[in-house]
Image 1 (cartoon, one colour):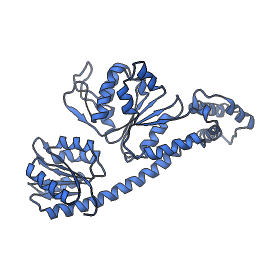
Image 2 (cartoon, one colour):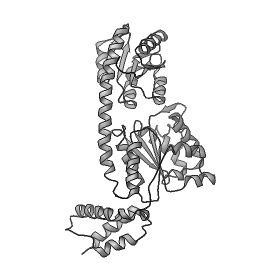
Image 3 (cartoon, one colour):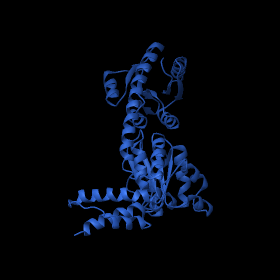
Image 4 (spheres, helix red, strand yellow):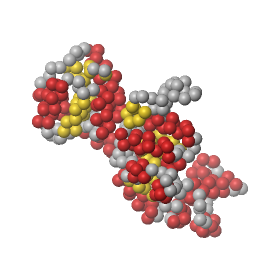
Length: 377
């Protein structure tokens, strides 16, 4: 075999698992074993595989039913289906659902090695294409982060390193600095860019409802819960979840969020079964979370779990060299949107913009330029 890969084997037959593990390890691969579908999804969340071998008929689960979930959570990992009861119908269904290949038991070690090698070659090409697409998407997203200051150059350099990873990112900055824009740039530059980007503002949802908004609820969980509802975590499965203004989350809910981040699973409100998800979490705050930890309104363990990669956006008053280029950008955009004729920012007006402190940061500057265009005779 030309390359070493992480292979996840999901089968409820111990003898077959042992055979596959021995064959694959002899070929130089790293192997993770699971005896059922749900365990397989848990192993996948712990360590994303390069390839999955998935049995169709297992006790308590159907591989064909689980195949879309495996493909959704690890889209760059080809899935080879296995069965001891092969039919043309099941083979066609497996291929339609996204399987790379379909093997009927019993099969030889040579068959496994050749099929795995072909699948890994295709998977490698798909990952390379996804990486290239992510790089192009990131360049486009970074282009929306306007500014020529050293601070903005450093921010863009950091995002180039952070975006392709799976790490949790804590984005800090005053109101109006563009924290959500940075979060979207991270998502667009990641391998998850084709998956959902889901946002929830922790400050805008009443404390008693935030748990249900995040984790969903089961029918009858509370008055008015007439059916099962998916929360933001499930909606973002495979993609990115932005927890906006995380500092405003009530203390009682923070342990459940911490567990979801650590275990990649949770219970819906009123539920008894765990829900596993593959979600990258980004969080924003305009508060100093270290101070919140010290005053007892934010958990220290959650702070450290969120602060894996800290990203700080400087206020506009500390990077005044960005004001002219931002003002011109907002002017051009507003003129295009309103259909107004050509306007320019005079020297006196620009001096006033540069002298102002912009407590509302970039958002306040944007609104000021838009207002000036609309009111201009």
